[in-house]
Length: 474
Ligand SMILES: *Cc1c(COP(=O)(O)O)cnc(C)c1O
Image (cartoon, rainbow, N blue to C red; front, side, top):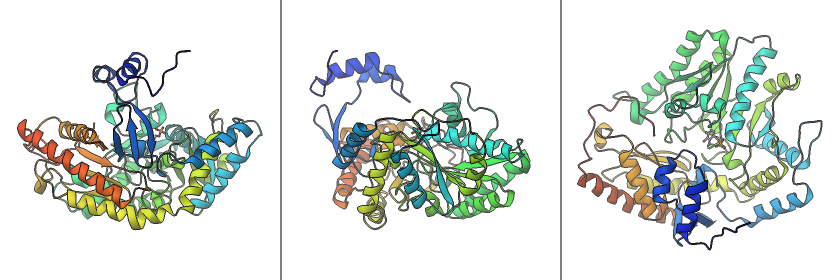
């Protein structure tokens, strides 16, 4: 076997990557022409690439490395578990200690009444589980017609057939025959992009009431569930106005439909509580978990299910599961992650230290002529870029041009900030220190200055006529 290592020249690694590796959500030909940036190691909040650059990871990988990189305890637990029991299934009347321990711990951490866990390998798989579980729940209760699920435009729930259908990304639906039948999307509570002249409060209420209108349109007896992220992540870190969630809860209660909170990003401290549902004050029947559950050290996801739904599902044979449901190594590593989050008081750190420091830094950055405002909850945030702050105007040109430019300038300044359209996205490891946040801000400021200068040079700072059209995705 040829050995390919960190010590190979970057160009050779890039050539092999281009020849054999198909990247997700990427135009691979464009990437091949440019060459992928090769990440070789990471410690704390810093990544190192094959050229020796030290890059501050403002995205915690993909919203997941909550405890930061390079924790030896995680490796030790994985190694121990692999020696003891690297794999066994949980299908045929068997169980094992890591799955038992992790399910028990999650039941303890989850809001009251959510005491049962169905494991998956990822967030996408977990949302596929949820879709089948809520439909099975209603069928078992003698209401098989209750099969419709309502979600939101610009939601992200994963990339499989089921979870991609639940998501509201139109550019995903355009490929591969999505969405599957029985899934409906209402508008998102994105006041910044779509609120026009309404107050955030009125807008939040109006967008929540679209749920009631959709339920009535489908027939209240035909609706199984509503699924939503407490704070939309991949859609652009969209924090709903304060009026939104209480109204959603009222509507869900009124019509007796199930509420699924997709906590894949919001869970495990990202918003300052164990779950985003607590932060926004909702009572879900099912919570989707993944990402921060293991801080990304192992792939694992799952559904935390309320007593009422579990009682019905547990009484039938639910013909569903994954080879790696409750994988012992992944479960042991996730449990160690939960131990670290608790023993090191990481949630307090988010509430009292890193969260306030990030907010203060971003609010200062918002004075920049290109930054239209700050959306932030805990340690997830976005900065919408705009050519005209006062009207929250979009750019006249192609959506995403400014965002893409800014992301490239961030990378050039050794900072990872992602862009969604023309919004810059921030979601660093939860353990980031105020000093590291200062480094983040200074690199981000440089990147914004460079982006501004480039946009000005290219005559790209013109506002579009309208600012209240639905935001294109990208
Ligand atoms: C990432 C994500 C998913 C999908 O998780 P995967 O592990 O990538 O399958 C689902 N929901 C939300 C909110 C996510 O951010």
